[in-house]
Each structure stands twice: as C-alpha cells, then as structure tokens.
Length: 280
Image (cartoon, rainbow, N blue to C red):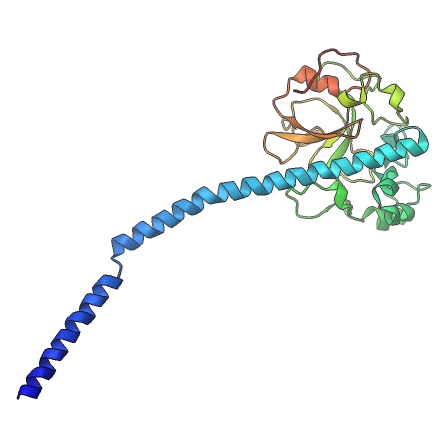
C-alpha cells in the first residue's frame, strides 16, 4: 500500500505541474486579439512609409530618364548646331505628312541606334514599313510611376515625355514660342530667356498621343500641372504633387503642381522676355 500511495501522490503532483505549465504557456482569446491588433496597426503604419520610399525611387528614376534625354539633346545640338525639330510634316498642316517626332531623331544620342536604323524616314511614321521600328519599347521614354497595361499605345512604343510647343495660359501661342515646335530646329541662341529658365520636355504621363515616334507628342501648356482633362496633352504625371521637367540646359527638375500659373507660362516659352520667373 505504501508504494501505491506514493505512486498516486506522484501522479497527482505531476498532473498539477502539467496543468500549471499549460496555464503559464497559453494565451487567452483577449490576449491574442490584442496582439493581432498591434501587429495590424504596425503594418498600417509601415506600408505608407514603404510606398513613399518606393515612389521617391521611381521619381528619381523618372528624373534620370529626363537627364539622359537631356544629355542626348545636348549632344544632338553639338552635332547639328541645333536641337531636333519638335516634329516634321505634322498633320493636319501636312495632309499626308510623315509626322516624325523629336524623340525619334534623338534615338542615336541615347544609345538606341538599333531602333533608329530601322526607321524609314522617307515613309510616314504610321506606314506599315515602320511598324517594326515603331513597336520597339524605349525604356528611357517611360516613367516607372505610370500605371499602364502595356508599354505600347496602339501597337507603337509609348512615351511619357512630351515636347514643349509653348503655352496658352496667358497668350495664344502664335507664333509658337516653345523649344520643340513644328518644322523648325531651335538653337541655343534662339532661347533668349535663358536655357536654365526654359522648359524643353516634360512629363505627360500615359497621354493618348504618347508614342515616341509620333510628332503629336508635343503640346502648349494650358492648365495647371496635373489639372488638364484627359483629352488634352499637358504637363501631368502620376507622382504626388507635381511632375518632372527637362530644361534647355539639360537639367531635370521637379515642378510643383502649385506653381504660379504666370511662372509656369513663362518657363514654357523660349523668348517671352518675362522677368522674375524663378521656380524657388
């Protein structure tokens, strides 16, 4: 009997210890819900910060794209003593115009010789013979922040960057006073407002005419940044609070969407003789 008693006592003691251990290591439902709530709160606080960092990186990549385009345009000017025309034989002024864009002419200067050599400039940009070249996707012409289903528009390589034809904010823009205009190659000496204060290219993200080969990727600015209706070519981006632009001196800068409209109009002209058009 003494051995039996000792065995019973040992079993009881072990049972108490096991229950005690389970009690110490377990979680109540309330504790679990509190932990889940804290984790959810931390994730909610962390995600916007991660998204902001990613957007900053995308915006910097977009600026780098414009910087590379700027280097290409500067080298083009060095080779031909002028920037490329904004567009040649642009419709409807030219009924059956070939309608090639500045962004097609600059290709050899941004290391896209293979695509450039495929283009037949003696045929229109939308002729079947140019379909193969036009369908090439040029990453330098695409902003990484732009949400798109395809890097092509109607089968042709897209671009998020348009040439500045002038402005319609405070004037009729006739004759056009931008740097990228039809049928004319602008030189440094034509930019009398100064190259550091004259916008040459800017974002026009995912716009309907945004094909790098098509000379309709020009516009005269008519609205505040990011405020134009969808059908208007204008400065717009998918970056928060503004868009990137390339100036005639080759510098790429971020343009705040709240910029004064008169200043915005002034930087879109090459020879407006405006005063006090600092961006700061």
